[in-house]
Image (cartoon, rainbow, N blue to C red):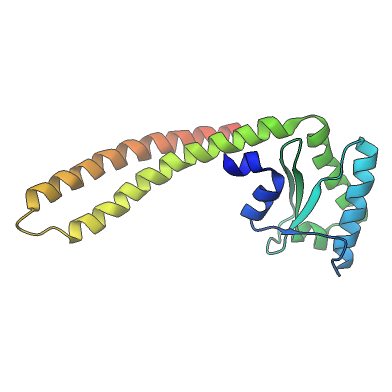
Length: 175
């Protein structure tokens, strides 16, 4: 939630994207910035900060942030594999999300889905702790250790069951 409130720049950095600036030496970076400027003028909106996920070869892009701090993130695969018109179309699509005010709902969805995924991860963490817990059992505290392990088994089972359902529902929401 803090990342979402902080804005698109924080989210872009969180996913490992690097800022694309005018000082970039890459021809693809400069072309991207020119396309983003064109689309901002055409959409009548401010120019979002531009980021690139350098290690991602898939073709993708997304817009993140809020009204005050918006970031456009493009993968390196999109820069490498798309021609100017195709890249322009991808960027125009992302600007459509800005002008249709999709940012607010997308950011809320991101927070909810992350929370649902956290429940699943907490259940998995309980099961990981059981193995660590089992290695520490001694004869003197066996009853306490068994009680602690049983708690972790029950908590882990409940959290994993709920988390799996929530993650499945989250995937349906994303679809």
